[in-house]
Figure 1 (cartoon, rainbow, N blue to C red):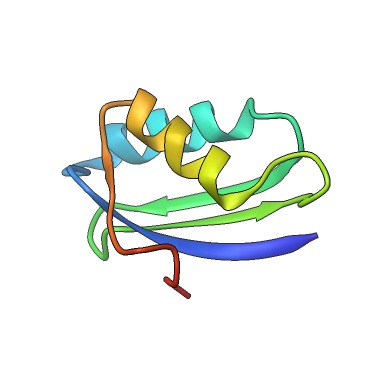
Figure 2 (tube, one colour):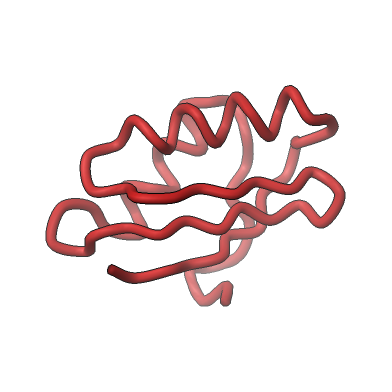
Length: 74
């Protein structure tokens, strides 16, 4: 399992955290998600044989949020 932190633009409340964590949690290979609107960071534990960072970032976009950075966020 890998863990990544991705900066996310557009989260403004606990509801945003829950929406994003729920959506990412349904992705195959994702084990644990913690989103924090105050820091603007989502931390995802995932199986990199089932999903990669690009797939996680795409799911964040699908939810209506903006994954920030170039993929080097840690």
